[in-house]
Length: 261
Image (tube, rainbow, N blue to C red; front, side, top):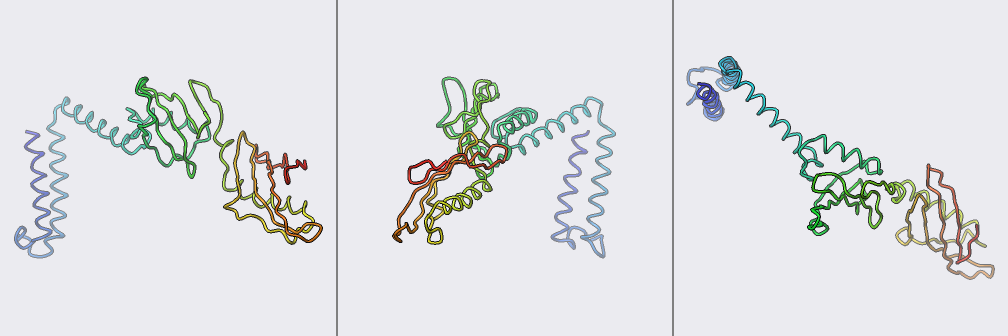
């Protein structure tokens, strides 16, 4: 009975579509505004038959329908969640746990997850996924067959492995603000060491080498400037910054191979 009743709204829907294209042929009984009136007929009939179907359903059928709707909703939630979808998780709670765990490692803005089969471990069943965290790539997430995290690595440095947290990505990756500060500040420091700072011509930003390790930022470059005799010479420099807790304090300055402080 319910199957037959559920079939009727489908017929009404088809009629509604046909009326939109050819109202004179499929709704001749509406003398004026057939398209507009067909909207009203469609929604009234849909609501009417939906009520009839619900009223005639047995408790078992209602329970089955509610279960199917819950399963459908759960599947939609899983498909919308990139962690659940890509890592092939069975619940969104698993996805949320993994996402929250990554945040404890400083990985809080995952924009992309890709399975890298070349880094899988077939003997153990461990799978590897490449993560993109904002502008930071080269983050590797290793998942056990039971869908728990086995390891998290940034480049060649382990942040987590076998139940132990070994580091935080914020101690290894320079933010744009940190890098910009180091570039500007380092030039000011080096100018203070030159004989003729007004003649200084620093390397292009693309030629600088910048890095971060254990919260210590390092910037290396060169500068062309006049010496005491007025000749232009090139000098190299490396400056280390303590970037922990946003201090940005200079810890070491090496100029032409000599540590100034």
